[in-house]
Length: 103
Figure 1 (tube, rainbow, N blue to C red):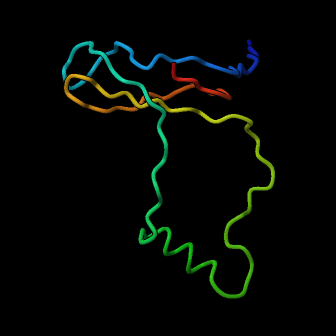
Figure 2: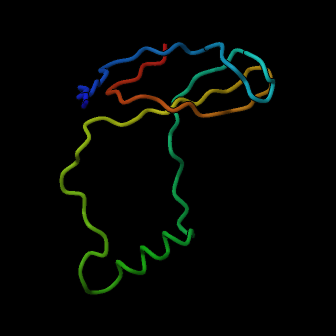
């Protein structure tokens, strides 16, 4: 048997500023502050960045394929949970949604 599931895309999700969830360092449920994960600044001296710069330099074609058409309309939002007792921070994988509102 073959089942076909429709992809569910949530438009807007409200998340509280503080949630009570499990802390692996405290080994019990504690109150955590919730924030949205944002990728940091890329290091210019990292090996991949230096290699990419060298390959793009000079004459010749594009070394990597340019992204012409994006297949996805949403991104997976990652939540950052910080324990208020011990300060341990962990990431929680989110779901695909267009807008995440921390209230």
